[in-house]
Length: 288
Image (cartoon, rainbow, N blue to C red; front, side, top):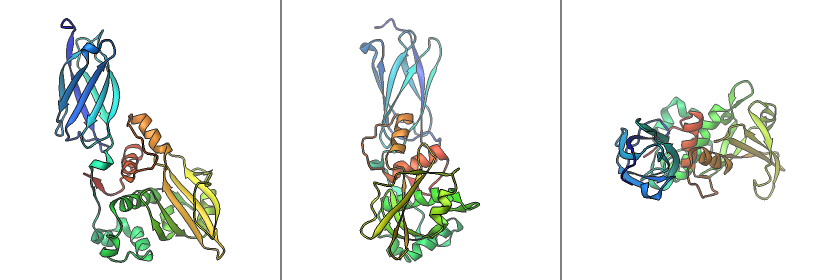
């Protein structure tokens, strides 16, 4: 169809920080009027917008655009290229967890920085008092911990006291959750702070033999919400299963950003991206 009007399209693919990515990106146009007008581009933006030349315009300008980066999740969007004007595709993408590596603050930084003072206290109480002990946690465990620490430092009860300050020690580190011994007032304070938390079912949370399930609460975030589920044993010890967004938040992010997400298990690197993109909350480590 050589008689079709065409125009360049400006292409800008950003990360969750709003920076244009430096990555090799395959961009496919599936024209909604004619298969003969389908196109494929291979671009390497290298931190700046790319120009996609010769894209059909009105009345053949409507196309589904599938964006397949190398280090970021594949996503799709639609563009309707007008006649005589330059259209623009401006999208944000999450990293592809399997293709990135985390860069965490060093153990020395955790020991010296005021930002990590509460985390430092809990790590010491949890037996992670030196660098070899800290390094026994794998990358997903560390990422999950930094995600939770950032979120729990922001969420407050009791006239502004951060939720994390009620954590005494962590008994189990997992990629998307921690199990922690917490201070006795926390459940009642969370229950009484209706502006920040609401009651949800905790039926799927297992604490093991000897623990009796209590209540469970979630923040109101549409993506990246914090859930606190409490249990008590016969000695009166209080434990919390603290997790981020099991699955629904990831589904929400997928719907909004058109990611193809198939796993039912939350990846901590996805939570990293959700916290930054949806909440402007930096967990304190990078994914490169």
